[in-house]
Image (cartoon, rainbow, N blue to C red; front, side, top):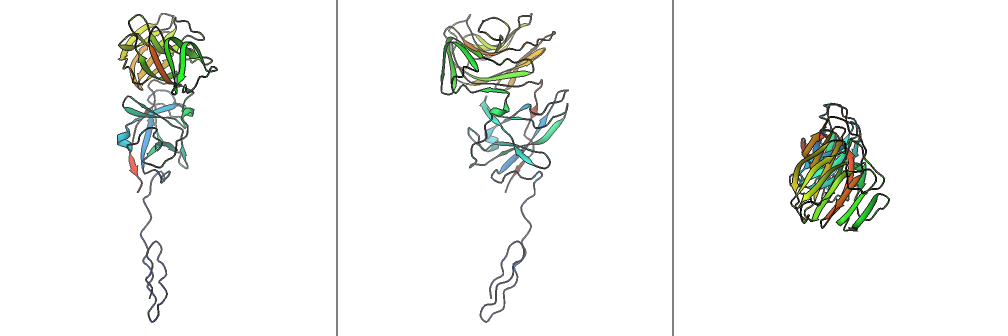
Length: 336
């Protein structure tokens, strides 16, 4: 007779063959696949990591705050830019939601930016976030521009957003300032509680001391080269230093980094009422505090003078907190 089928629920035996008895019923299969808590978001992605986010400050961290997770592609899935297979999601206890995210590739690491989806109390940790990876066939991820409060890529000239003076050009997805040139945010100014990050490559260093190129916060609505400023600024051919002059007695010069001609880096300036934190490839490089609150809103500005030449690929603004939220990779799981 016929052979009984095997599988999940025992199958009915095959019909009797000519001159033979009917086949025996199939044997019931074993249980289903592994159970995950929370449920696996999408089987196309074969790896995931829990991403706890800690608010190390003494105040509530509001929903919508920007969070940066540092990872290394080699230890995740070996992916290459633009890292489309990397997706951030959040499990709220009932549903899993994919989040907008942006990946920076700088300083030998990758940084995944996303917004918090719920308040995190002072000193508390939210473990509802997950990084999914290892999906070679994944399509392009959603735009990450929504992660930030202000975002410019300089893909083309935008006079309504950026005013310019001098030798300014746009090419290859960047703005180039070539000696005696400057741009400034046309409408937007930013008070303490905001931070600017910008991608900058030094194409031509300063020929000698006494000149400068710079990026960060300076002035309110003009190209005047006086204080107030909070800048990454090069005043010598070999380095770029951190510098503050608010025009009210706070004058300070801090640590510097090498010019590193031809190599792009991300520079950050985090503003607070009584403090500034400078970041280099997202890692804190210097900070300075003072006594009296300084709350003036300042424009974003980039300048290159007297023979120097810089290339700026993006400028974006995020909320600032000291210290910023601590995101890390937690337990990892694999989908069979």
